[in-house]
Length: 98
Image (cartoon, rainbow, N blue to C red; front, side, top):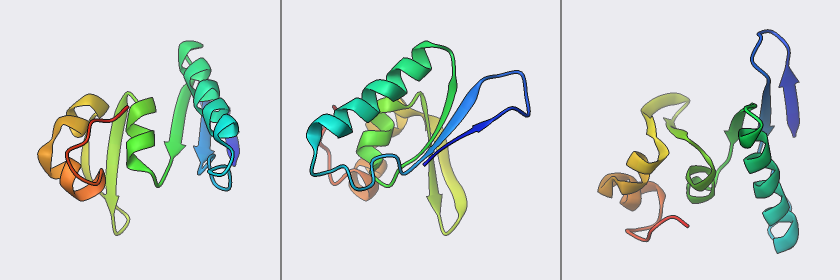
C-alpha cells in the first residue's frame, strides 16, 4: 500500500508490502521493482517494507533488520548481503542476491 508524506522538503514514498498477492504474476512483481527503481532514479526517497529480504536488499541502498520490533542491524545493502550471518539467518544460505 503506497503512502506519501509532505512533512519535509524531500520527496518520499512508503511502500508497505507492495508485492503482496503478486507472486503468481511475475510481470506485476517485475513492474513493482521497476517503479521502485524509477522512483530512486528520480531522487525520491523510498521506504520499502518487505518480508522478502532478498528482494528488498536487491532494490535498496540501505537495509534495516528488525527483530521483535527493534532494529538489530543497519548498514548498506551490499554489506548486509555480504555478511555470512545475514546470509544464513535471513537470505536462506550463502546464495548471492540478484
